[in-house]
Image (cartoon, rainbow, N blue to C red; front, side, top):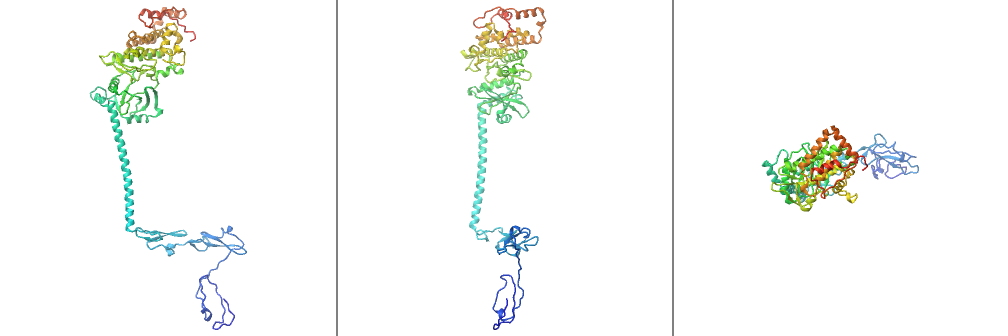
Length: 553
């Protein structure tokens, strides 16, 4: 400020001052009296000319901002960001302002201040709540009641859901137990338990398994555990907790009227201890259809080996004769030694299992029937497998032990020929193996249908004898068939002779066998029923059949 005119009452001096904007207020008294500067703030600022904010990083320090200068020469200056103070040009730049400590905040008395970089925040103290205007106040009694009600309803709802879920699980568990008890009762579980308690069943070897045990053993009946299936049902491979590997048979259906008969079969089969019968470990009666638990046989079925070219080539005649002899011994045992006798009813290669040593194990007694002492015949619905069914049984519905003999005769023919019992893809006259076999036998063409894997010069006589035995088993009239005991004795003799071929040491017999291979056949006649009634006819056939071993078949 400067003055050089005479002004009434004004001092004659001239002076000027530089102060911070808004820190000085002009008054007319300053013109009539001496004014003393007692100290006013002064700010000196500058502008960096001829430059832009894009180059301000090296000039402006931390927590600062660049302010462009509006002038003809351009330029910029540095300023602290909001909430920071200090020299923006000197390191480390502007520092945070603690609004809470310096009182530079607008938090209410019922709130606490929390300092933050470049600012602060207010939080209501415990017991207070925001009033919607930035302040804090105690909640009203109504709001407290509402909060209590909301909390109570929420907790009540949660507890209700938990209780309902627990009740539902309990209901499901009780329902499951009731269903299992119902099936257990309907499937004869109490009868079996009573028999076990009375000593009718050996409790040490026969168990009543729970449904949960077998579910775990089969990995919830995993598809990868299936080892066999057909019209009867499905068989799963299972692992029991005691380490045993088992076969769990899950049938497709069961006749409710045959429950007691089923239990009787389980009881009888559990008492059978024969090395060539698949052992029954027990059963599960808690499912709609009972489950049977057998020992696991590792090498598959005889059917799989006979009808697979690679496997059939590894089954020479001696192995097939061994299998036939062992299976015959089982049926003979069931018919003669078991008490009461048992008719298998479904004898076929698929029900003859083989272990790693090709030992035969007869299985699948699901269709079997017990023969009581006062019964020699059972009148039943026709049940069995096409191609193995006894024609007499199909006509009369009268089931006898000779029905198993017929079915075993078909098995013998399959062992000899390697062909299936029923083959729909071939010529019509060859579709039924039994009829085709008998026809070939009558026409003196036996060796034209035998399996190439079993025919050799040393066993031609054995093959003929087994073929004739099969023919007797396939007799239409059941009374003319041999018993399974007779069949087992004959096959056992052939097997022992094959193991100890003392006949081959006889030069006269060897010459006779050689003559059979080179001499033309002598024709012979069969009766209408293909029955073998005399030993003379049997010997005649054995010694005069044409044996074209070297001929192509």
